[in-house]
Image 1: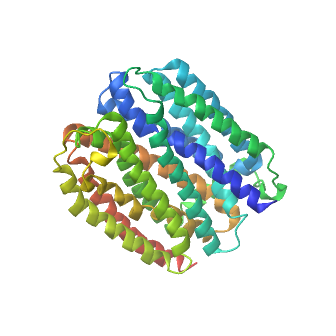
Image 2: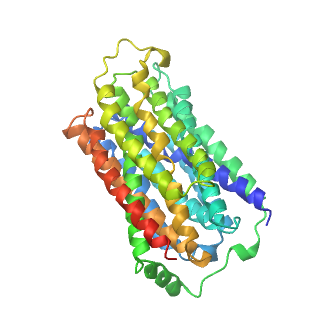
Image 3: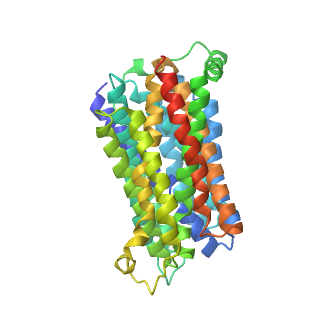
Length: 404
């Protein structure tokens, strides 16, 4: 197996799905404007994305090696290409549900495959940490691009013009399909388990480990924070800062950019500093931003805005929380996966994806509920609760992994 070629294929696949998955916040905003739904109704799109990820990951993770990682990723790319074209012609809230359900199913195939393959192209924990952070960093770059891609197709005179972006997304998916199709994989990276029942038994055995329980709770809490903020930041910018729709979307890109920078930096920093100190510093800084920066953003008096340069500097401050929460997810995943035998990576990845999806769904629904009932200016303050619990979980994981 040419490791560098396989790495490029993983980067490209993650990049494509970054744009598709995290366009949910943009589509939530468009759904309220174009399809006549309120905040709570719109938040169901997160569930249509995340629940298929959870269900499919649970069902296929343990025996995905017998399907073949390459074949699984090709299926995922083909499905989303069709779903993008369908979104263009369907142009309805129900079609948006179908789109995100398809993206969810496909991403389950992609993510379990990519996470399982990382262990086959790295030699030790530091390499694993670095590659995991880099891949997740590229994912965030894709997210940042989405916040500029959709506004580029948006028009104030034609409410349906934004749908043209799905032709481009279908094309990018097909390009990724073609590159992956011609990438060579060695057969020994796709080792089947004993049997299907045995595969599920191995996955459930992982739940007997305290390490697994603490980890999946940590993954759940983090994604609850990240997706809750990311999915609702465009709406926050629109309703609290009173920014025009396109600028609200582009402003949300700051969060994605800081997440990308944070994850790429983490790939370098963790080669020299133990992960526990990196993550502890990061979560404390994120909490300080919520406590001290967010109130000033909420109280900001915004005058007429026609471009990003018209926004006061403090308006850019809260999305910087992404710089500090960025390293948490890839490093937690890497720490746990590198502590387990490679034969269990696929099963553990399935659990990672399941609980990440559940965390994303609950996070978006909770923030959507808070936006509607507590007001958009107060909703993000509640992220301090899962942040505090996450800090405690870091030290529990450190203690458990040090025994392995």
